[in-house]
Length: 256
Image (cartoon, rainbow, N blue to C red):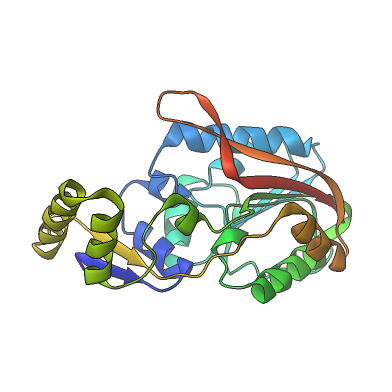
């Protein structure tokens, strides 16, 4: 479908799984260096030991699980679609992969000593769903488990960054015109025409998203039995290899 209208994040990742390049599943535009940079930072913060049982919820292209090979006792990844599961299984052998979502984990309680849920909670549609997700993370965590919850915005990103959010093609074009003027409108019209002709894909998303200031998110996690350790601004690697601090997103570390 040349113009793809997305209503939830699961549909978006099902679309990413149609790419022949597994790095697309990272959600970082296929930027392998940026993905490895983010996962290296996460693994360093978890202080892995050989008897750890590691869970990566929303494991994307499996990069973090691959990088943890030989560092832990067992590695388990969760992806939301069967299409992703097939790709990651082929690319990252030796790990256990399951289909599921963070608010309904297909896992037994008290199973993992280290848990990662990075760039996932922000994709959930409401605070109540995030609360369910935190409850599930706490349920599958062992006592004293270390939990990394990453890339959680404190403000609504699409509005703050001036991005269009919705499924209407006409409103998308009007938004481009209001924000950037005639020149960008013409480029958007050309891109739309190319998508209609099937030469590229234009994605319009009305998927909900979660954001929370740190004090409120920490309080939510505490209600689920998670103890805050630290939180800090998320940093990413840009296309030039420069480390940039996010203006909106925070990373959090908790103990069960």
